[in-house]
Length: 220
Image 1 (cartoon, rainbow, N blue to C red):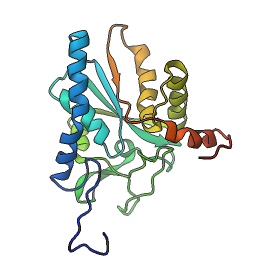
Image 2 (cartoon, rainbow, N blue to C red; image 1 turned 90 degrees about the horizontal axis):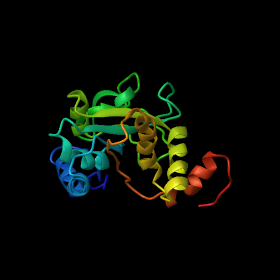
Image 3 (cartoon, rainbow, N blue to C red; image 1 turned 90 degrees about the vertical axis):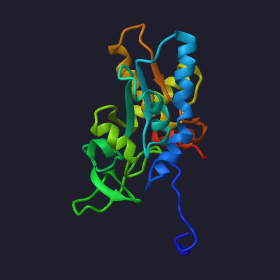
Image 4 (cartoon, rainbow, N blue to C red; image 1 turned 30 degrees about the vertical axis):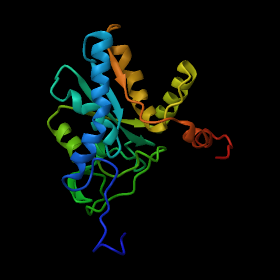
């Protein structure tokens, strides 16, 4: 498409780019939060106390959050990729370490170098190693409606193994970032509070990569 810009238009598959594309993708993805809301009200009669989701560009997270934006009692927490740590340059923690810029036709937060150029980013998760975040997430962050926390590779891998062993559910390594933060958060909450973690995908695809990360030779 880069050689045919006169008759093609590239649309990102996330809540990014110029208007109306972030809104279009959000409206498709919001079924996630609508189902969470409906099912919890049916099963428990109340809303969750916390909703957590991993966030790269942010489609999964905004889909999880959107149904609860007008419910201030519901904490919304996006978990971004801290890679080897936000004190290094090996991360994709856009909110934690990025700054305002313009890229892909949108104004938002981006990981940038000293000259304002987009910086290389890293995460064990291919789905989270994007150098920016959707503009609606930037708005929610600036307005303090949602929180965004960094989660390292080590924490995500530990959470991946934890859920696999305790529940028999193999989460995508992207989703494991949200599980990791939930493990920190849950001990600080009351036993009757409700925490929702969005599992954005299955982790069969990640087993070989995680094995290599732990020094075990395993072919894809």
